[in-house]
Image (cartoon, rainbow, N blue to C red; front, side):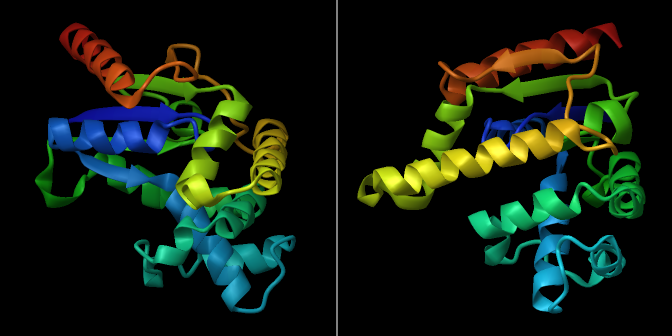
Length: 215
């Protein structure tokens, strides 16, 4: 069983890379950020307070009832909710078993699993066979998210709003007490600021191939 951990900040390209690798390798893929987005969205739909750990934990305990393919999970506002509920230690602890089970028992009897998030290589799967940390300059990440959301129809104010949102989320992710965003000591760093997805994909494949040979 091969486990690949991919971490990095929002809009760094880790999700795109993880999905592409999973398809190429025929591995199971889990976007752990979707779990926190689902919890945040659940809090909002229940009329709860996203700043309340009790409300967030109540939502996290309903995870298996949630639709992880809900289109609203991709909304920028849901990402902000996710960043808030993800800061609560009890919520992270509640979702940990779900992630561990996926890594140890990938669905459809896949030969491996790829998980992406903020703390996969440091907390969820510290013994992962391969660890990648994907990053990019925050303005580059904001531009990517801006183009995804608005394309050519967007305006400067919308870009600025996304940039400020990412800066807030970075600060929250990096400084939270429980499982802060950080590169695992033995993770390979891939900076995507000036690289397209194909270049990053080829480099990741090389690192994975080298790592699997040495395992």
